[in-house]
Image 1 (cartoon, rainbow, N blue to C red):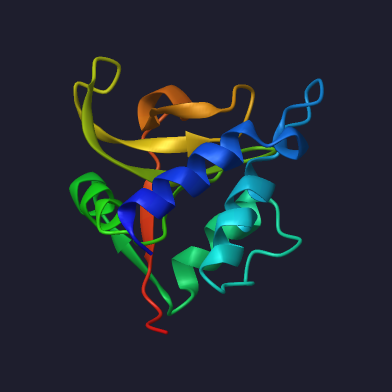
Image 2 (tube, helix red, strand yellow; image 1 turned 90 degrees about the vertical axis):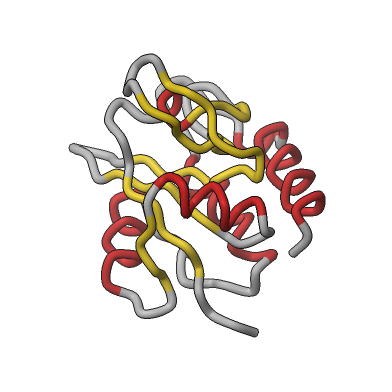
Length: 142
């Protein structure tokens, strides 16, 4: 996917009324599933954030990367997710093709993400996650 198309898709996802929080119920898994659909990947269907995290850690079509690699891959139009397991629920977000931004919270550069959660917006990963997540690139070549 082209960078501009990915950016538009992610901007639409965070604005989508179907993905807005409802009280304490957030829909990060649905936001990531919507992006996955555009990459012809259906492995996240009906999964919660912790399940998505578990799947990408062991599934051969997902490769682990660092924040720099995540940002660069998204910049090149690849599907990249940030994921963190939690109790009772984890969190997932799609990496946005906008480069790295310095996080005062983490004292390092981090990627931007399309966050669907308590607040839906394009933000630094450090604003979407309590602790630094792990980053995974969808590597299946179509």
